[in-house]
Length: 357
Image (cartoon, rainbow, N blue to C red; front, side):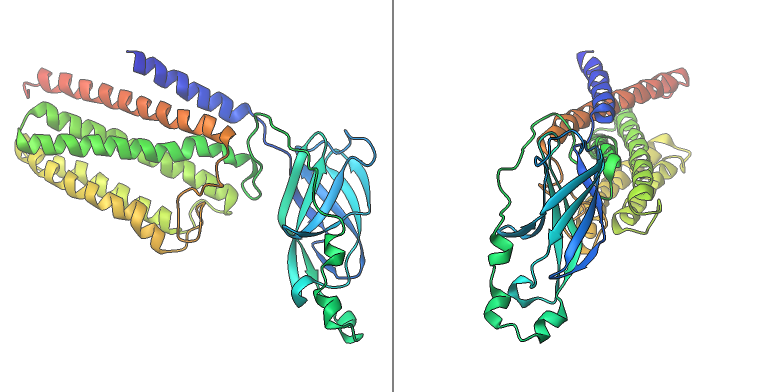
């Protein structure tokens, strides 16, 4: 009984905390998005969940970062409102390493909001007129203009808030609901195939009920995972179904398990159907691993992680997210097994009432 109560508590915790905790401040975009070396640039920075106006003059600092050791700082900063500011730069006349163009990261340091950044915020193009003016190679490779005002003494704010991620924004909260569905699916399918193996060793009708009940509930969570993924994809990728390799393989896996239930009902003799279904369940589970975890890694995927890797990278979750993500997995898993146990009990009562036990 205790684990059922725990499942409800953890799911409610994931639902409430996952939806109510705010995101950290971030930078949505900058304008303009292209500039030329050597020019005076007035850059508008648009923040998210930011409070730019809650600061004293000179407390906000803005950089355009080339790499970890090179950056150019804003000379003047004007706050327009809580989410918009103007930063004026005198861009260096050259790019390090003699490049023709590069992408710079915008970094905003605020005493209240902490550090916000936008990778690849500004495309900086080398002024060809400067190159034609006869500038020496030594001036081209010199880093002095990029290292005069280093990025240091940043305000690191430690609070309980979720990380800001461009593109997905508030939909990052779906991590606590979409991803756990697949964990529950795997745990339930493992339980299902375990009881199918036991049934082949000892044809106990209760083993067959449990194999079917766990597979049925696992399929339910699979469709929930597919649905929440499509909702997320519609927001992040522009449409619910984009033929991503992970989406395609997931659909194939669910169709394979749908065939499991069709097979069970294709025989007049329940024992024969249960035995063949148990064998099919083993092969269905064996196909699940390559479909969900091997094949998607062989192709580029839109899912989080490196190219060809549909899983999470170490940078995708911070400690605040882990405090919700792991309890969410446990809560949804316990709830899944609770639903499966109710389904098995119902089927047991149904069989007894029809003299099938």
